[in-house]
Image 1: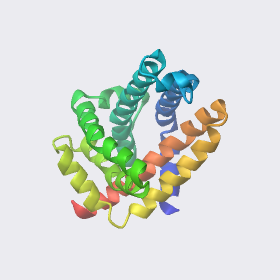
Image 2 (image 1 turned 60 degrees about the vertical axis):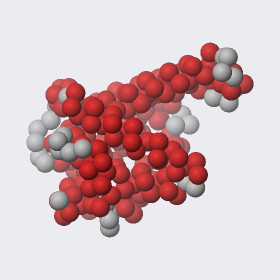
Image 3 (image 1 turned 90 degrees about the horizontal axis):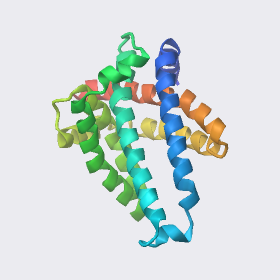
Image 4 (image 1 turned 30 degrees about the vertical axis):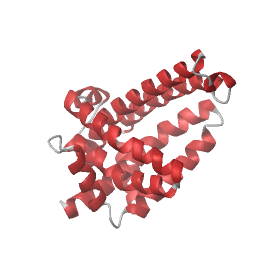
Length: 214
C-alpha cells in the first residue's frame, strides 16, 4: 500500500501531463476497437478471401505501433516524475526518440510472441513471462545502450521477489479496466485515471529491484 500511496502522490503532482497522454492513448485505443469490433466473431474474418480479416490485421498493426509509441514516450516521463523532475505534455515528444522507439519495438518483437504462445498453451507461462519481462521496458528506455536480450535477462533476474506485486497491480488494473470497458465512456475515464498510477507503481518497483540487482 505504501508504494501505491507514493504512486498516487507522484501522479497528483504531475496529473496534467500524465493524464493527458493517458487520455490520448485511451481514445486512440477505443477508436481501434471500434474498427475491429464489427468483424470479431463474424464469418468474414475466418475467410482469407474476405476484406474483413485484412482490416482487422491492419487495425491490430496500427494498434501495436500506437502502443509502442505510447510506451516509448510515456515510460521515460514516468521515470522522470518518479525521480522528482518536472515534466509537461511536451516532454512526451522530447522522450520519443528513434533509439528508444526501436528499442521498444525490438523488445516487443521478442517478448510478445512468447507471451501469446504462453497464454495459448497453458496461460500461466504467458502470465509469468509478462510479469518477469515488464521491467525490461523501463530498462530499454532508460538505458538505451543495453541490448534486448540483456534487458530481458536483467528484468528476469531483478524481478525476483517482486513478481507477486507486479502481478497484483496488473490484475487489479486489468479487472477494473475490463468491467469499465463494458461502457466505452467509462472505460476511457477509468484508463485515463488508472494508467498513470499503474505505470508509476511499476516504475517504483523498477527503481527498487533494478537498483538492488544492478
